[in-house]
Image (cartoon, rainbow, N blue to C red; front, side, top):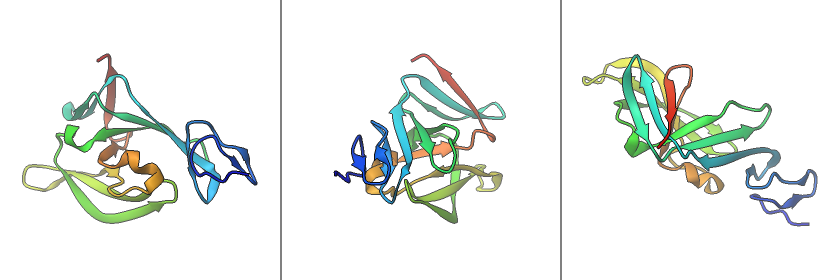
Length: 146
């Protein structure tokens, strides 16, 4: 039986993978699907624009639960001043996450823990390299036609 960690292959314990999904090599029931968003995405906080992109990605993840979709914006499309924190966490599907505070022009925190990123994602999740996601409970996310 094939044991490919990615797309559409069978796994000895779980049967068929979800087609088009990226699977956790150690736990095939933990998977995600990442797709381009064919819309313009703007991220706002208190009326100020933090990011504006026509190249965003939507990530859908299934693990211990069905997680809310996450929108990932290319780093170069983020206009907000963000400061990376020392805090990191590890996701066995995506890799080590780093976290960001929103800061003002002087570097003073405006809002802590507003965003996260996988600066060096695991090889099977490298599509996320160079992208940042904002916590949807801390920002407004607007989608509009291109």
